[in-house]
Length: 361
Image 1: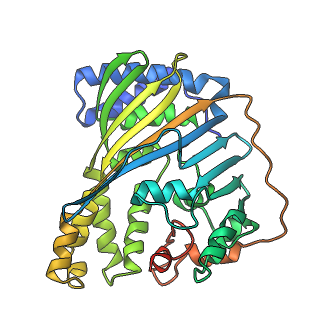
Image 2: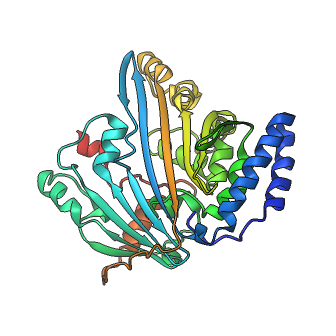
């Protein structure tokens, strides 16, 4: 994500796609994927493809014991807006929108709270001064390394060599558009060209193949998920990671790809049913021992679906702002938060940087 990639030639893209189609796509899909690949090659060849804006919006549907919480996707209120260039990235993360879209309500003190992050190959600079109003409203919350202020995080010192670890701090969710032109069509299992205005492709893939197309390591993600649950339960993290990995490799995701009038990648929609994660928890022998029968039934019945919209705006004239000056280095605090040594050296990414359960109590 947000890294300078080698420009992709259309012939190479088509060759990669055809080789990937041996895994179940029919002849029509091969032809359609080839057309999509050739179209996205224009994105790869466009001079502005390495500099672009990315806006991420999402909506969810929860169903727990018959009680449904649904938050419609709001394109006008993205959760994250990033400006990405070969030199650095800049992201604005709206915590209020995130919490409202995920849980269906806006917690006290979260309205319009934005965290700003600048990131390059050497460090990240984060501005969390907006969280002062949250700290004032809820003084019992320990914000830890997210405490209000402007500070830096050194990638080398934090040993942040994984995609997930950097992405958790930097904000944007995709590789550069040249890489996307290659990886996204190759990840599709089925594909159909459904419209010419705008040019739209609808297909399916798996969670794992989509993750990898977006520059994520699925095995790492499964390990992080297992480590995450391992913080609360006594399950074997290796066995749990295998269960999560199997889920990601088999879970079907619906994908919609829209091109703009120039044939460049414009919008990526995904519709992903993640209910199976809770089935894993309910059916795991190690975890089930820690639940009552009623609790296990609740986990087994949970339905969770997420629709995500990522809009891309290639723009060679983007001027990504420089980070503000700061002498405060919180690398060590973030390293202690993100790397949990008692889980065999696994890195565990806390999504918000503080204990949400403590806040909600």
